Length: 486
Image (cartoon, rainbow, N blue to C red; front, side, top):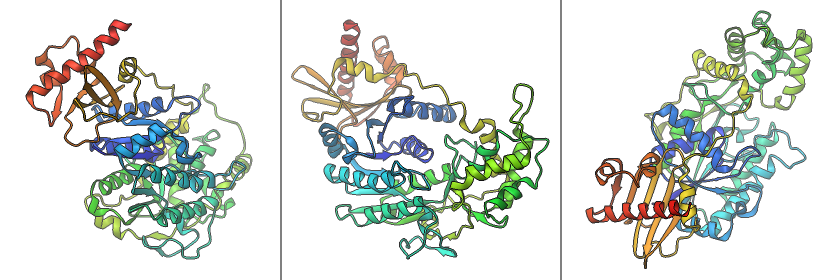
C-alpha cells in the first residue's frame, strides 16, 4: 500500500487533511518538525486525539519523519529517503509561511520558494512523480474582476511578499520536468471549521479580533467602532473578502486526491459568496457583546477608544495590503469535480460561529498543555527491534503488516525469517502482504486475550485462516520478550 507524504500537517489545513486522508484509509507519511514545546509525534498525537473525540472513533496514525523545510531534501537521511522511494507514491505539499512582508529571516521566500526547491529535491531523490501543491487564490495579486483557474502569471502587481512568493513556488513546480502529474489547489482566505468554529491559528480573518479582544468591552462597544477601524486602514465597508471554511476545503481536496481522473488540474477553493467588511464588522461587534465577559477577575485593559485605535492601526499595518476588495475566483473545475460538495455560503451564523470560537478560546491563549504519549506502541517495537525504516527482506519468509489505530498506534510491517522477527515502520509496499488491523486496547491485551476475543477484535485483509494464528503468535512473542526484558 503506497503512502502520500504530507508537509505542514500540524497547521490548520494540514491537520484537517491528515484527518480526512486517514479516515479514507489513505496511509500518510507526515513530514514535520518538532516545536519548542512538543516533539513531532506529540504534535500529531494531540491533533488526532482531538479529532477522535469529535468523531467518536479511533483513527490510524501516520508514519512520522522529522523534517526541515529549510534544508535540502528536508534534512532526511539516506535510510529515510530509501524508505520513501519504496513506500511513497505522491506528495501533498501544504507547508508554507504566511509572512506578508519580507523579514530578516528571509521569510516568506525561505519557506515558500527555497522550501519548494527542497521538496522537489526530495521528490527527485525518492522518485516521487505525483505532486499535489497547495497554492493560494491570491497568486492573482492585485487583479480585479474574474480570476480563472487556468491563469497564473498575467503580469499582475502584488500586494505583498506572500503573494509573490507563492507565484514563484507555483511556477517552480509547474516547470519541474520529472513531475509527471501535478494537481494545484488554491484556497482563498482559510478560516476555521464552519460547524464548530475550531482553529488553532488566528491569522487573516482573526487578526482584528486578536488585536481588539484584550480591550473589548461589551458595554462600551458600538456598531460604529469597526467602521472607524476600517477607515484608518483605508478599507471601504463595501469591500468584500473571500473567506472559506477549512473543513470544506479539506473535503474537496481529499475527494480530488482520491479520484485519479480528477488530477492534473487547478482548483480554486472559495466560498459561494464574498463577505462585506461591513458584515464582518457587525459580526465582530455582536460577538463582543455576546461572548466577551468582563468582571473583577477579567477586567480587560483600560484605554479610551483613540488609544485602542492607535494600537489597532499599528498592529494591523502589516495586513494593510491584505484588506482590499477581492476579485471573484472562477471555480469551474472545483464545481465539476465535486458537485456533491458545493461551495459553502458564509452566512451571518457561520461567521458568528467563527467569532464565538475565537473569543471564547481567547484566540488560543494560553496554549494547551503538551500531549502526553501514553500506551505508545512504538516503544514496545523499539525495545524489540530498532530497524525503524528498513525495507530489506520484508517480502521474504513470513510477513504481514499491522495497523494499530487510536492513541499510540501506527503502521508497521512484521517479518519472520530464519527464526528472527524484524519490525519495520510503515505498511508493506507489496500489495499481497496480509494486513492485520486492531486498536491499541486490543494490542495491549494480546497476551491475556483468548483467541476467540481476538477473532472479534482484529480485522484482516488478504489473510488465509492458517496465517492468522501465526501472526498473532508473532506479536505475542514480541510483547513477551519486551516484558521479560523489563
